[in-house]
Image (cartoon, rainbow, N blue to C red; front, side):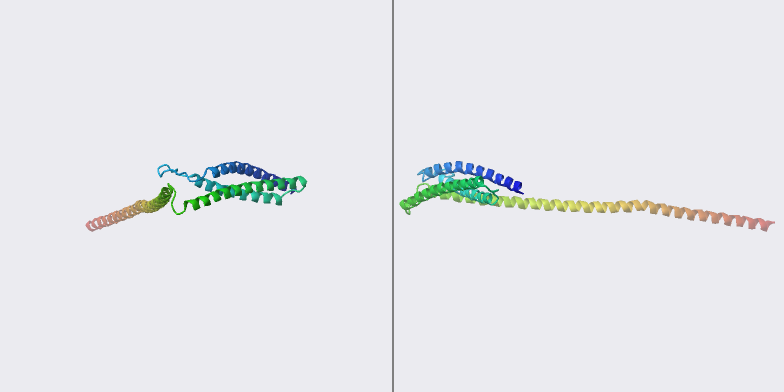
Length: 228
């Protein structure tokens, strides 16, 4: 049981290392993006489709998820730790690394948030250049997304109709097969009936012939007896 626990703890430790490396690389890019993000002052024709502000927000959510995942793994490592001073030191070290990452993440987020607040105060009620265009583009993207969603629904409905028609045709084909099978059965029975009727008629003709011969013989004998 202890070997299984030790193996699970090693797996958790490997996952923690991989997450730490991933978070470390992303934090560097996050910090650079935080320093470069801001109002571009470009005209409406030059506004990029995805601004650095949007990229910063997306990376912020991704880093927050990674930090939460790393914190959860650290908790699991503490629960299944095999024991010993070296193990406790390792767990402590991983927690310190997580704390450093969280502090750096919070520092960069707070710095960008403070800059955004200052820009909002300086900007006041007048929209920045390209802001209206950005809103229009977002509206266009939303409409395009809704249009794509409606198209997907329409395609799904057409596929369902086609599937129902296919099932209906399959059912009709099976019905026709059953009808054809019944016709074949009836057709196969008719030769037997015809054969029976033929044998009955043949027997009647044979009986009639025998009766005729008997009557003829009797008549001939009576005539012969009468003339003698």
